[in-house]
Image 1 (tube, rainbow over the protein chains, first blue to last red):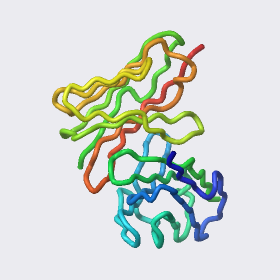
Image 2: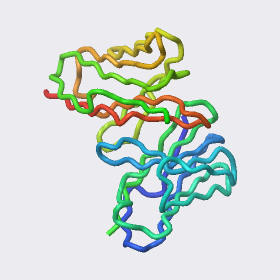
Image 3: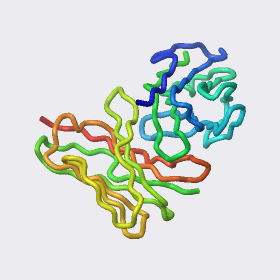
Image 4: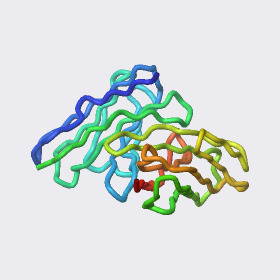
Length: 111
Length: 110
């Protein structure tokens, strides 16, 4: 079974902090994704990566950056956290087809 | 850009009854996927449909892909409390990305 692991289930940070969300997959998948999920808005793509050191902006990249130094790890960075970034963050990976495997999610609160 | 719309957004279903949730795309899709997210959980892949008019069944769940490959439906019979959750459809939008619908949140009334 594919395992996508997100470093924290719950996280509380303060406005202005730099926040790192980590995601690791164990199946040598090429593509990895970061989404945020908000009530009534569904899943919105923040960034994705199709190879090591490669990244592309999704639909809502503002205020975020990503890092993919190793194939198995994809990090989401909130450069200066703001309250409107309070959300559920979901990481997903796929080997190159369309089926996405999601991690358990990180519920992030910015105070 | 390519959009995927789901209706209804919310459903309350009596246990034992049937219900259907619908997914519509603004463009023709090469395939469509369905995911289920339980309360407090993460989306889990259910199925992928590829062919025009395709119908697939998983126990009480029946998935259909329209002839024009622009719409899809999920029909659940004899609803159980374990069917509670949000059902998402998703279609390809290039560069290995998926366009997700906003989901259909299903509440089951015992």
